[in-house]
Image: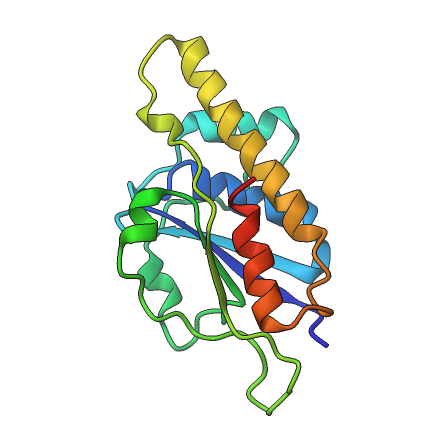
Amino acid sequence: MKDHYNVLFLCTGNSARSIMAEAILNSKGGPQFTAYSAGSHPSGSVRPEAIAQLEAVHISTDGLRSKSWDEFTEPDSPKMDFVVTVCDNAAKEACPLFQIGGSTGGDAQAVTMIRAHWGVPDPPAVQGSPREIECAFREAYTILDRRIDLFLSLALNSLDRTALQKAVEQIGER
């Protein structure tokens, strides 16, 4: 029975959606989860609108930064239990082989890495008034928040790998 899971959220720029997902899960997941985020082609900065949205709902933004998924392929990087793409571009790209989560001691209940896609509209792509852009970031936050709540409600230690894979994938359809 695992008591801790690492989750990596991926998108192309790692400037908004994956950053918000990382912050939401770290805020809500307690000691059972550590969330990370990365991008295939990171922008190098976090969108101020994403920071503003997180701060508006009192979620810490300390330490959030745009980074490459290459950081998570190093031998000493955290082993991922879940990898979730949140943008269609990253979902279609060939992802690096991330380290598999679970114990190396032959623990039969160790969970191997689960991959899923939870597509979320890209708020930085919205062009319009400041209000329309703010609404786009709020909508992305709301979608991610709802999906993370569903993820946290899963009985992770009770589901076999196939059922868990299906359950995590289905979250992206909601």
